[in-house]
Image (cartoon, rainbow, N blue to C red):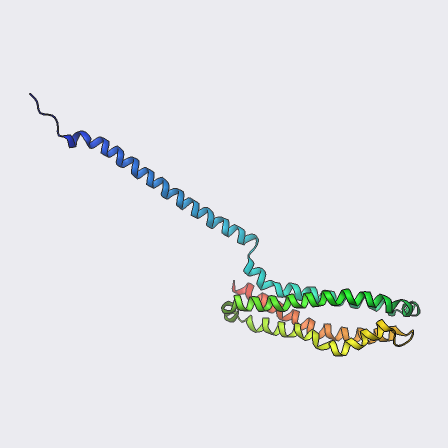
Length: 211
Protein backbone atom coordinates (compact mmCIF):
# COMPACT_ATOMS: atom_id res chain seq x y z
CA UNK A 1 0.00 0.00 0.00
CA UNK A 2 1.58 3.33 -1.03
CA UNK A 3 2.37 5.82 1.71
CA UNK A 4 0.62 9.25 1.61
CA UNK A 5 2.67 12.12 0.40
CA UNK A 6 4.26 14.40 2.93
CA UNK A 7 1.60 16.81 4.29
CA UNK A 8 4.00 19.72 4.08
CA UNK A 9 4.27 19.27 0.33
CA UNK A 10 0.47 19.10 0.07
CA UNK A 11 -0.05 22.31 2.08
CA UNK A 12 2.72 24.21 0.31
CA UNK A 13 0.52 25.72 -2.46
CA UNK A 14 -2.10 26.88 0.05
CA UNK A 15 0.57 28.51 2.22
CA UNK A 16 1.96 30.31 -0.80
CA UNK A 17 -1.50 31.57 -1.75
CA UNK A 18 -2.15 32.73 1.82
CA UNK A 19 1.23 34.46 1.95
CA UNK A 20 0.52 36.18 -1.38
CA UNK A 21 -2.90 37.39 -0.19
CA UNK A 22 -1.56 38.70 3.14
CA UNK A 23 1.38 40.47 1.52
CA UNK A 24 -0.90 41.94 -1.13
CA UNK A 25 -3.38 43.16 1.49
CA UNK A 26 -0.74 44.93 3.58
CA UNK A 27 0.86 46.38 0.45
CA UNK A 28 -2.53 47.80 -0.52
CA UNK A 29 -3.03 49.30 2.96
CA UNK A 30 0.46 50.83 2.89
CA UNK A 31 -0.17 52.29 -0.55
CA UNK A 32 -3.48 53.80 0.58
CA UNK A 33 -1.91 55.37 3.68
CA UNK A 34 0.95 56.78 1.64
CA UNK A 35 -1.47 58.08 -0.98
CA UNK A 36 -3.66 59.75 1.68
CA UNK A 37 -0.60 61.37 3.25
CA UNK A 38 0.56 62.68 -0.11
CA UNK A 39 -2.92 64.02 -0.82
CA UNK A 40 -3.01 65.79 2.54
CA UNK A 41 0.43 67.30 1.89
CA UNK A 42 -0.69 68.41 -1.56
CA UNK A 43 -3.89 69.94 -0.19
CA UNK A 44 -1.92 71.76 2.50
CA UNK A 45 0.53 73.09 -0.08
CA UNK A 46 -2.32 74.11 -2.36
CA UNK A 47 -4.12 75.93 0.44
CA UNK A 48 -0.93 77.77 1.40
CA UNK A 49 -0.45 78.72 -2.24
CA UNK A 50 -3.79 80.55 -2.17
CA UNK A 51 -3.62 81.84 1.42
CA UNK A 52 -0.66 81.63 3.76
CA UNK A 53 -1.53 83.13 7.17
CA UNK A 54 2.13 83.78 7.97
CA UNK A 55 2.62 85.77 4.77
CA UNK A 56 -0.65 87.62 5.39
CA UNK A 57 0.47 88.55 8.90
CA UNK A 58 3.80 89.86 7.62
CA UNK A 59 2.05 92.01 5.01
CA UNK A 60 -0.75 93.26 7.29
CA UNK A 61 1.12 96.32 8.67
CA UNK A 62 1.90 97.49 5.14
CA UNK A 63 -1.72 97.04 4.11
CA UNK A 64 -3.19 98.93 7.07
CA UNK A 65 -0.60 101.73 6.92
CA UNK A 66 -1.34 102.12 3.21
CA UNK A 67 -5.03 102.52 4.05
CA UNK A 68 -4.17 105.08 6.74
CA UNK A 69 -1.99 107.10 4.37
CA UNK A 70 -4.59 106.96 1.62
CA UNK A 71 -7.36 108.05 3.98
CA UNK A 72 -5.24 110.93 5.27
CA UNK A 73 -4.76 112.30 1.78
CA UNK A 74 -8.42 111.75 0.96
CA UNK A 75 -9.28 113.89 3.98
CA UNK A 76 -6.93 116.61 2.80
CA UNK A 77 -8.30 116.53 -0.74
CA UNK A 78 -11.98 116.68 0.18
CA UNK A 79 -11.60 119.29 2.93
CA UNK A 80 -9.30 121.69 1.12
CA UNK A 81 -12.03 122.17 -1.49
CA UNK A 82 -14.00 124.18 1.09
CA UNK A 83 -11.24 126.80 1.02
CA UNK A 84 -11.31 127.46 -2.70
CA UNK A 85 -11.63 131.27 -3.12
CA UNK A 86 -14.80 131.06 -5.20
CA UNK A 87 -16.75 129.10 -2.55
CA UNK A 88 -14.97 130.16 0.64
CA UNK A 89 -17.73 132.50 1.82
CA UNK A 90 -20.38 129.80 1.44
CA UNK A 91 -18.10 127.28 3.15
CA UNK A 92 -18.02 129.39 6.30
CA UNK A 93 -21.75 128.75 6.68
CA UNK A 94 -21.65 125.00 6.02
CA UNK A 95 -18.28 123.99 7.41
CA UNK A 96 -18.98 123.83 11.19
CA UNK A 97 -21.90 121.42 10.81
CA UNK A 98 -20.27 119.39 8.03
CA UNK A 99 -16.94 119.10 9.81
CA UNK A 100 -18.64 117.86 12.97
CA UNK A 101 -20.14 114.89 11.15
CA UNK A 102 -17.00 114.36 9.10
CA UNK A 103 -14.68 114.31 12.09
CA UNK A 104 -16.74 111.87 14.14
CA UNK A 105 -16.71 109.32 11.33
CA UNK A 106 -13.13 110.03 10.34
CA UNK A 107 -11.56 109.69 13.77
CA UNK A 108 -13.13 106.25 14.17
CA UNK A 109 -11.55 105.03 10.94
CA UNK A 110 -8.19 106.52 11.87
CA UNK A 111 -8.15 104.83 15.27
CA UNK A 112 -9.27 101.46 13.87
CA UNK A 113 -6.57 101.49 11.19
CA UNK A 114 -3.94 102.65 13.66
CA UNK A 115 -4.91 99.88 16.11
CA UNK A 116 -4.72 97.28 13.34
CA UNK A 117 -1.30 98.54 12.28
CA UNK A 118 0.16 98.40 15.78
CA UNK A 119 -1.45 95.07 16.72
CA UNK A 120 -0.49 93.31 13.47
CA UNK A 121 3.08 94.58 13.79
CA UNK A 122 3.34 93.27 17.34
CA UNK A 123 1.84 89.95 16.24
CA UNK A 124 4.21 89.36 13.35
CA UNK A 125 7.23 90.41 15.43
CA UNK A 126 6.28 87.88 18.11
CA UNK A 127 5.26 85.02 15.81
CA UNK A 128 8.09 85.47 13.29
CA UNK A 129 10.71 87.00 15.57
CA UNK A 130 13.59 84.75 14.53
CA UNK A 131 13.04 85.13 10.79
CA UNK A 132 12.51 88.90 11.10
CA UNK A 133 15.74 89.15 13.09
CA UNK A 134 17.64 87.05 10.56
CA UNK A 135 16.56 89.02 7.49
CA UNK A 136 16.87 92.41 9.16
CA UNK A 137 13.18 93.32 8.93
CA UNK A 138 12.57 93.40 12.69
CA UNK A 139 14.00 96.89 13.14
CA UNK A 140 11.96 98.17 10.20
CA UNK A 141 8.75 96.73 11.64
CA UNK A 142 9.60 98.30 15.00
CA UNK A 143 10.37 101.69 13.47
CA UNK A 144 7.18 101.58 11.42
CA UNK A 145 5.10 100.76 14.48
CA UNK A 146 6.61 103.61 16.52
CA UNK A 147 6.11 106.08 13.68
CA UNK A 148 2.53 104.94 13.12
CA UNK A 149 1.75 105.39 16.82
CA UNK A 150 3.37 108.85 16.63
CA UNK A 151 0.32 109.92 14.63
CA UNK A 152 -1.31 110.48 18.02
CA UNK A 153 1.50 112.83 19.08
CA UNK A 154 -0.11 115.51 16.90
CA UNK A 155 -3.38 115.41 18.83
CA UNK A 156 -2.50 118.32 21.20
CA UNK A 157 -1.77 120.54 18.21
CA UNK A 158 -4.67 119.48 16.04
CA UNK A 159 -7.49 119.07 18.60
CA UNK A 160 -7.95 122.84 19.23
CA UNK A 161 -8.27 123.42 15.48
CA UNK A 162 -10.94 120.74 15.22
CA UNK A 163 -12.86 122.24 18.13
CA UNK A 164 -12.57 125.73 16.65
CA UNK A 165 -14.05 124.62 13.32
CA UNK A 166 -16.90 122.60 14.85
CA UNK A 167 -17.87 125.27 17.38
CA UNK A 168 -17.27 128.14 14.94
CA UNK A 169 -15.31 130.07 17.53
CA UNK A 170 -14.18 132.51 14.83
CA UNK A 171 -17.83 133.50 14.24
CA UNK A 172 -18.18 132.95 10.52
CA UNK A 173 -14.52 132.49 9.61
CA UNK A 174 -14.13 128.76 10.22
CA UNK A 175 -12.28 128.32 6.94
CA UNK A 176 -9.32 130.06 8.59
CA UNK A 177 -9.30 127.41 11.30
CA UNK A 178 -9.61 124.75 8.61
CA UNK A 179 -6.50 126.19 6.94
CA UNK A 180 -4.59 125.67 10.18
CA UNK A 181 -5.94 122.12 10.53
CA UNK A 182 -4.99 121.26 6.95
CA UNK A 183 -1.45 122.52 7.48
CA UNK A 184 -0.87 120.36 10.55
CA UNK A 185 -2.63 117.44 8.89
CA UNK A 186 -0.38 117.69 5.83
CA UNK A 187 2.79 117.83 7.93
CA UNK A 188 1.66 114.78 9.89
CA UNK A 189 0.96 112.88 6.70
CA UNK A 190 4.30 113.80 5.15
CA UNK A 191 6.30 112.91 8.26
CA UNK A 192 5.16 110.11 10.56
CA UNK A 193 2.46 108.58 8.32
CA UNK A 194 4.61 108.45 5.19
CA UNK A 195 7.71 107.37 7.13
CA UNK A 196 5.78 104.54 8.82
CA UNK A 197 4.52 103.34 5.45
CA UNK A 198 8.06 103.42 4.01
CA UNK A 199 9.39 101.35 6.92
CA UNK A 200 6.73 98.70 6.37
CA UNK A 201 7.57 98.63 2.65
CA UNK A 202 11.22 97.91 3.46
CA UNK A 203 10.25 95.25 6.03
CA UNK A 204 7.93 93.51 3.58
CA UNK A 205 10.51 93.59 0.77
CA UNK A 206 13.14 92.06 3.06
CA UNK A 207 10.73 89.24 3.90
CA UNK A 208 10.02 88.62 0.22
CA UNK A 209 13.72 88.56 -0.63
CA UNK A 210 14.51 86.07 2.14
CA UNK A 211 11.61 83.71 1.39
